[in-house]
Image (cartoon, rainbow over all chains, first blue to last red; front, side):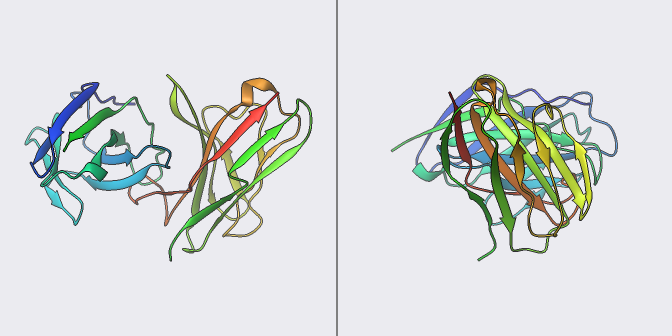
Length: 110
Length: 114
């Protein structure tokens, strides 16, 4: 399975944009890029996913590099509630499972 | 409200005493799955089900059983719990395979086996 690499942690300021990077240099052509987050004491929560094109939804934007070897999750305006562990995950197709790594811990300063 | 529910949320039990953790979803999802989360090991899949009566092993199935008799329910059974099954358990569901569809996770069940 193709793997992802994320920094261990990142800090941001409230109300500022946050860019969370993810490297996936061995990604294959059929791998989707997923982002989930896990707030303290809660189950993981879906954020966004994409294949080739950039994606936007109410929570975030996903920017995918042209060669697809990296991607960036963008939170446009961080709030204290966005402090969580963010997981970047690749899946090999519709029926593939999601393998969660360690993720990146985002801290948000007031 | 669309949700995945798990019961109980907290459970302390003793070695060898059979237990069942229930999971139910109200979204008519085909796919359901169980994970366990341990410090330093992250989330690991135990079992999954692509549809009613279809279940398969995940990465760490030893010591667990599941059944999928109805679309909405996917109970996790520990026939003879052991202390190494002390963990935080999450149930999840998605419309179809999680590779293409978002997974919805339950709130978690914290299990302690003494």
